[in-house]
Length: 204
Image 1 (cartoon, one colour):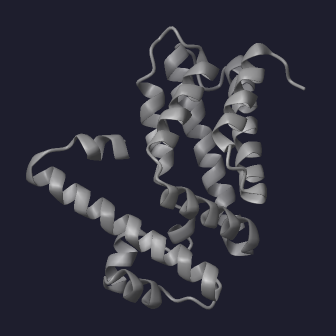
Image 2 (cartoon, helix red, strand yellow; image 1 turned 180 degrees about the vertical axis):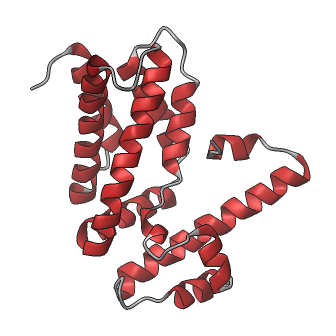
Image 3 (cartoon, one colour; image 1 turned 90 degrees about the vertical axis):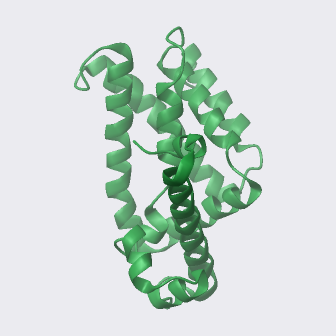
């Protein structure tokens, strides 16, 4: 699974091409989110996004097959997944996800944070985007479950694993929704504290 960690480590011509693609993709999404916020999602066309990003509409669709993908797609999920897989074996599941999330947040610039907040606002306020998000949420839960199962050496269908992953996912989803709603500047520490409480079994 390609991630921002992988791109940063690449060298040579292939690495340069991948970094250029990554920059183009980020620029397209950044302009799309800005235009959607300024003009409204329905009123903004893919052609306008392409013009703002100084690419062709076909290039936009190459990176984002649908208009919804311009908002729904999240490059930071693969970053977290890659960080999770690199965590030392002595950490339990909750501790490994905590560490992975901290590493992913460390990669974000203030502009990245702003874009993520704007994405969140759009996802919660535009009905067609909310519908697309539900599919992505299910897919994310499945990936987290599979990665967690591989780490502890059990089946993704294991009821105990599913209960643990469900609790972790619930904490993450609640924190994300609250972040978009309140713009909590201490989101990382808030999320980390919630995961600590979960790790300690203090679910209150």
